[in-house]
Length: 466
Image (tube, rainbow, N blue to C red; front, side, top):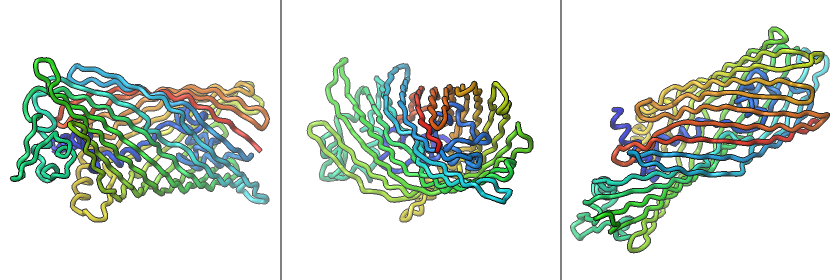
């Protein structure tokens, strides 16, 4: 079953964004490390610390510590570099993007004559993930072309005079329905460039409360909206005597747009002034997807097809979070700070498709998800030291691999640094995030491309208290 699943993934990853892929739910299930600079510089370990609007998306009880209204705005620069190696042939590509971080407001309400000292209403729009990336890969000396191994063997898809490969003259279709092509035999070289763009942003509407400064509770209604565009440019050359004698190019574009809904709830307990313990649970996010696909083949002429628009749903897994923080110092101390740790568990094999008109296809995809993915664990560690109006922050995070290891590795490691400044009603936070990870890309014949991605973010947040 694993070998079959790897082959299915190779077709989807290499050339098959024309159809839904088992990986689609993962795109919107795994989140990155984006938002406010304070949150990012602690590697996201704010679950038990609170005091940041990003708490709404992780442990909403962290909003319960607010006593003064606050408004934040964040933005930054994303730098991504990806290297690929296929059978000894290496390429690298990069992309730089100006990115939105967050905009939101926390409004505390003083509760008189009650053990519940404060309640908070929070609204915000925060970025949870960015898809910005460019990937380039290639290989030479290939004995079996894509045309020979895939097109010539797919009777349903390619024995159609309206198919873009036939219309462009790359493949010939005779009156008897037989396919032939100059690319059937020979030696070939192939190059592929994939451009990703889009993001996941979430509207958050939160209610939280503070009970005697011992117990903080909160809940968030999350409405994520996301877009993801993938443009794949594939070129195949037929080579003889070290010269290119025939060539074609296939450009595919897939646009995913979706909106969803989820609920998050949590608590933080403060048994003593220096210790905070918390936990949170996130329901699955239920997304409605609009999926548009188009393809152009360039050879003798240009032929394009615009595929149908698909509408379907996906479901992300439940998330369980545990948080702890140690607070040292008080208002009379010259040095004040926190040490914090967050743990997150998510079983990605529970991701699901929901096809309204294809029950068998839904069953096949969901069964494949159970074979491809597994539970993953995420650990985040963060710290902050306050020196008067200045704060120094740092963190480290490890996001576990959601794939069965034989198929892929999507684990990510983060190292973070940050600086904060607070003066009266205005503050400024800066963060630097460095992340890296390795993964695999499968070609149509199962050959692997090993990829290494380095991602750097510089983020700034302006804070207004009123």
